[in-house]
Each structure stands twice: as structure tokens, then as C-alpha cells.
Image (tube, rainbow, N blue to C red):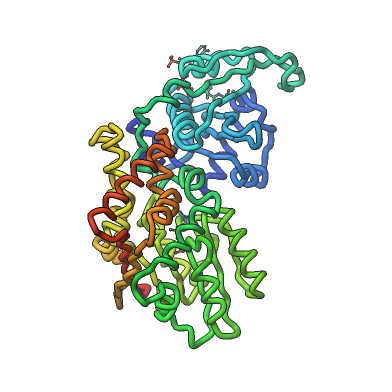
Length: 464
Ligand SMILES: CC(C)(COP(=O)(O)OP(=O)(O)OC[C@H]1O[C@@H](n2cnc3c(N)ncnc32)[C@H](O)[C@@H]1OP(=O)(O)O)[C@@H](O)C(=O)NCCC(=O)NCCS
Ligand SMILES: C[S@@+](CC[C@H](N)C(=O)[O-])C[C@H]1O[C@@H](n2cnc3c(N)ncnc32)[C@H](O)[C@@H]1O
């Protein structure tokens, strides 16, 4: 979901921000909202902040297009173990804004995220039996009343009954060969990235190991990038979008005493892995979960910031660039690796051709852009110019050559392109078999199993 996901001219649905807390408190203080939900009267700032930060919960905010003020919210809480792929939904709209279709917009957006990105099978909720507007809204969206819980929750001094309602993902749609198309946001939507690519470490671990093991050229990326930092002096360094921390860990090893190394990433799993590896190596790294678009550091904290292979993932590149500049001291350095437009293009081609062989529509978004179009070598200078002066650029060739189809298929099955196809309903085994065939044909033609991996390192100074 991007900020541009406008569904009516005056209201947009977007992700939640810390700055929404006052408006959310105001919504939660509305008599209609207290009556319709289980919000505690007098809910305070800390409770709302904690609710926003709750793990395994995804918030969407309906905000006025004119001033971005939150008018309503919805969130999904998803379960684990045998409750995985089941989520409960809670929503509310400011009393002054009801009846304008905002509830419907929020509900549609939450259902979209739930089914298309969290791969839910069931979205459930509880609603007071006399909440006619909410029941109408849910029924119109396809929720079915499954039963009534007696004395379900206290409202205004008495226990009130509540209906249990649920919406199931249509099974036929989930099983169909014609996969639902992944929206262009598959490479930027945070819930999707966490569900299908970065929420666990194994995919990225296997891909990173492949970059090292199969690289053809002599230049190892991490030391090559670190050479661009002023590591002769103690420095405060941030690795933004650190992943498994290959840059932060190496910097912590190389930086002189008195340096402070900080790392941040959207993914809790990545941050836990960085912290564990730092502990194992006896290194001090302050690692935190958070987004580039809202960095939890005061202005001017860092002498240098690394941001490698991340910018094409953020929802708003300008906002991320502003944030990276804000946390740098005046004159500080940003060092950012940005992929070539056709990064890893052989892998993309093999998959896209396999999808065509399997009968997918050539116009399917599954064969669409790979995300690198948003921030690659060609347009990164324009993005960076917003706050930075590029003082050097240098290309790195990390092209890989695989010795066998098996090793290449293993690597391929951990790529985002593959994960996104599977997330959209494509049968992963069939797809991988078809890709394997194409790779074998490449070998049979006497060609090598090469995957081109080019990227440019931009060294930028913060403009005063
Ligand atoms: C329920 C709530 C989320 C709906 O938000 P909203 O922005 O008003 O919703 P919409 O305008 O998209 O749609 C509301 C629907 O209910 C209908 N509705 C409104 N009042 C109604 C009533 N008294 N009886 C029956 N239907 C009613 C509207 O006509 C509309 O349906 P329609 O489009 O078919 O005409 C909102 O009223 C709210 O936040 N209430 C307080 C908190 C709450 O009850 N949350 C739900 C907890 S389960
Ligand atoms: C391709 S990896 C790069 C990791 C690391 N910089 C490296 O080069 O090894 C992209 C990382 O960016 C993280 N990420 C994506 N969007 C982000 C955001 N908005 N804020 C912070 N991190 C983000 C992902 O969780 C993932 O770990």
C-alpha cells in the first residue's frame, strides 16, 4: 500500500505514523467509537503508542487528503501456530466523519492486505448486536454472521451480546492456476516484504552466500564499499536497511576505538540476527527495528550513513532521502549502493519465460517491473539531488557464475521474484521445474550459467 493509494478524492488510505497518535486519541475519545468498540474511555498516549507498535498487527489509516489528518483506522491482528493465516479486524471512524464511505474504504484496504499480502484464509471480528451501521458495512463486504456471543463485552455498565462475523478467502480463487496478480507494490509494501521476503532471514542468507560464493570478479563488495568511508577517524555510522548486517559488522570490526556503529532494518528477524552475530564476534552494534522513512534518531546524529540496496524498497523515496539527510550532521556522508536497472536480469528472464511457458498472460503484472525501476543507477542521482551532492560514483561488478543447474535453482528459489510469484498463487514447484528446464537449455547451448549483478556506489555529501 502506498501513500498514493487514493480511493476517493478527499481521503487516502495509508500506513500509520507516530505523528498520527494525537488524531487517533481523538478518534478513540469519540462517544460513537467508545460505544461501538472496546476502546477504554480515557485511553492515553502510551496505550495508543503501544497499540501502534504491537507485533503481528498491521494498521491502516484513512487520512484527509487536504491535511493528512487521520479520520479513521483499521488493524489486523494475525495468529500463529494453528491459528496462522487467521486475523481479527478492528476499525473505527471519527464520529464527525461517519457515513461518507470511509469505513468501506478502510475495510476494503484491510481485506486487500489480508488476502493479497498476509495470505489470510479468514478475517474475523466481533460486533455489538445493535451496531447496525457496522453490521451493514461488514455484510456488504461479504462477512457472514457465524453466531452470537452472549454478554460479550461491557458497554456503559452492562454486558452486551456480540455477533461473530467472518470473511473467508474464496478457496477457488486461492487454488486457481491463473494467479491473482501481485500489485506493483510487491517490492515496496512493508507487510508484503515482511511476509514474503525479509520477515525471516533464510532467503537473504542464501542469496548473500551465493553472491560471495559464485562471484566471478575479484572485488568483494563489502570492503570495497567500506573503503569509501572515512574509517581513519572515530565516527558515528548508521547502516540503514542493514539486512543481515554484512556492512555494519565489517564496519564495527574496522572502525577505530571511539566509533559508534548503529544499524536499523524493517525486519525484526534481521535485527535479531545482526545483534546475535555482533555478540558472537564481541562487537558493539546498536541495532533497532524501524523504517528509513521515519528514523528514530535526532537530527545530525551520524557522521556517515550506509544505505545499500534498500532505497528501491521504500514506499516514499523522497521521504527516505529526507530522513537520511536529517540524521546526518552537516557535511556528513551518505554511501548508497544502488542496483543497475536490469539487476540479475538472467534470473528475471528465466522466470518470466517459464511463466509464459506455463500459460500466464504476457500482460500479467507477474512479468512486470522488478522494483529496481524505482531507484536504480539511472534515476538515483535525481532522487539523491533532493538533499545531497554526489561527490563520487563507482561501479561494482558482482556477476555470478554457477557451476551447476542445481546450485542455480537453489539460489533462484530464494529470490524475491520467485517468492512474489508464489505469494500470488503460482505453484512454486511447477515454476521452479520450468525454470530448471530453461537453465538446462542454456547449458545445452554451450552458454554459462551467469547472473549479472551490477551496482553503483554513490558517495554523497549532505548539502547544507
Ligand atoms: C461502523 C463504522 C466503522 C462505519 O464507518 P463509516 O465510515 O460510517 O462507513 P461507511 O460510510 O463506509 O458505510 C456505512 C454503512 O452503514 C450504513 N448505515 C449507517 N447507519 C446505519 C444504520 N443506523 N442502520 C443501518 N445501516 C446504517 C450506511 O448507509 C452505509 O451503508 P451503505 O453504503 O450501504 O448505505 C463507523 O460508524 C464507526 O467507526 N463506528 C464507531 C466504531 C465502531 O462501531 N466500530 C466497529 C466495531 S465492530
Ligand atoms: C536487499 S536487502 C539489503 C540489506 C543490506 N543493506 C545489504 O546490502 O546486505 C534490503 C533490506 O532492506 C530492508 N528494508 C526494506 N524496506 C525498508 C524500510 N522502509 N526501512 C528499513 N529497512 C527496510 C529489508 O528488511 C532488507 O533487510
